[in-house]
Image 1 (cartoon, rainbow, N blue to C red):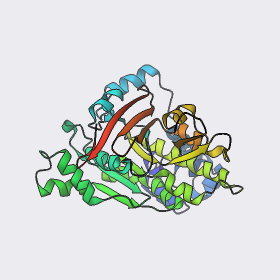
Image 2: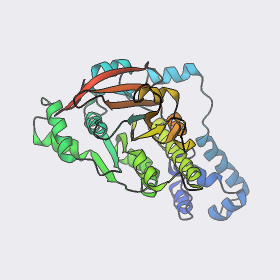
Image 3: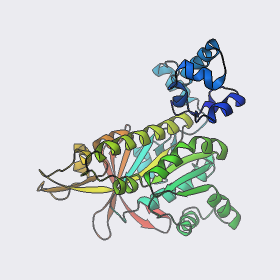
Image 4: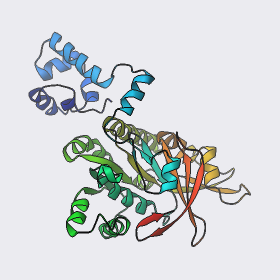
Length: 344
């Protein structure tokens, strides 16, 4: 909540402009200053600054809610609670699809369909609500230059031929998917920090980062002293900002992750330890000598709310696993990739 922009907590436009000239943009920026510093910046009296501190603090720390109040609020909410994947068995297991207001991670080896899944979800988010969509725009942050506009159109035409029956609808849908190619950690973080205003101004209903691990593993060599700590700080901040956006605007956030191989008894970094459930879900063989697991380690694993793992069983067979979910049991579904994207 401390990431909330000051423009959204009830302060006047004039005051927000004055604060922004001093690089005070978020509630965190404001609350990190002393009353004396705020008096100098705003030109207000001590009493005036004290009142502002109260307003900003309340915006960061909303009043307590009971479980009943939260349940009632969700049941009467106008916005959907899930974005269906249109993979019926998976949606049924997840009680509706990809949950709004939380982080969903898609993990798997190269070529298993992670980007295909993300492009498919991008199309679904733009569809009308009566078709199971969210009727909004999409922010797609591509860190691997894997996004293909041609493939996006192909999935749309093949998956919903009855709806995408004109060039106009295809153009409208593709114009709602806002692609950003960010190839470094700094670029990704700067983009995430500006998403709040973009979500409001463009009516964004889905945020995708494909992939989280790409830039992190490229820039943070955990064998070097100090890199482990800096990587953990970056991932913690990234997860915090994304959770805030998901919860504040009740939208789904989808992230893709890579995999890493461990040799039993020869782990070189605590950063890449994973929970036993994830080890089991991606284990190779039964000897225990090596296993494949989701990258970025156990701390990151706890940051995501739902984890789906895509696996290639052989040259033709693939399966999607629900490895972590607050609603669904551990289960798997076979799938293939066709013109219309993933098909169970």
